[in-house]
Length: 295
Ligand SMILES: CC(C)(COP(=O)(O)OP(=O)(O)OC[C@H]1O[C@@H](n2cnc3c(N)ncnc32)[C@H](O)[C@@H]1OP(=O)(O)O)[C@@H](O)C(=O)NCCC(=O)NCCS
Image 1: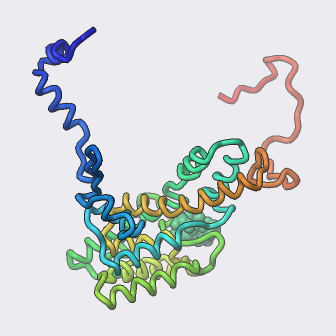
Image 2: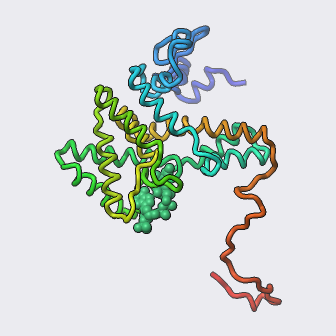
Image 3: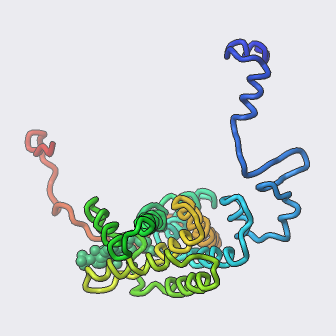
């Protein structure tokens, strides 16, 4: 059996150096755990428990410091707005379908979260990148309309036809948007946030709509992107906190479906067909020579 000395000899390091390397293998500013002690970002867990809310803790974990009350109010509003959009939202439908396939709650949640990518649930990240790009142009002295126009043009040039954070399948006007924007406006009036990303978001909405016969309103991803930018989150964290919020709805639906039961539910009842667009019925050729090569 090999000893620590043998292994350290093999790696060319002394035993002390090997242990030191192992100690630094994982480095984190987030949590300090010792026997009988747990501290998040330096705060003893027993002081956080019962005194600090879950949203404060999300902020502490992601940003390193405890947020102000006003910051929590705004972040919490964005999280509440994002928890659910019903069984026709693909993420929710997937959680429910997975459950009826016998997948346990962790698998149902993971399956659902997997689709929260660039198009569904995740566009907030790209929308934040758009807002931040416009904000950087404003910092350099460009006018708002020019900065918005150029940023949208860059996306059109790159083949992007759908600007993330705008438009909605169901809602001509997303009911979450005006309410959340009003909270951002109030927070800006109180000096909690600058309000400049709300201005940018509204300008993007106006610019997209100007090119179309009907408005393309800011959706929940677009308005929560405003909030996450106002609060100083990075785009990746913006997507991550949206996923945290939507996970609540995903869990609720998976759990409800488990109680309701049901086996192998597809996206629609079997009485409702789908549209087949392939070849009409035909006979399989008798010989291989009669088969037409498609390669
Ligand atoms: C959500 C979404 C899929 C809904 O699409 P939809 O209502 O089915 O819209 P359609 O594909 O029928 O498009 C209708 C018109 O609006 C335009 N449009 C819709 N969303 C647009 C957007 N985000 N940016 C620019 N134009 C958009 C389409 O180009 C189309 O214009 P046209 O008639 O000139 O061709 C779409 O708006 C989208 O992909 N948005 C970006 C992604 C996003 O934010 N997703 C989160 C949704 S909560």
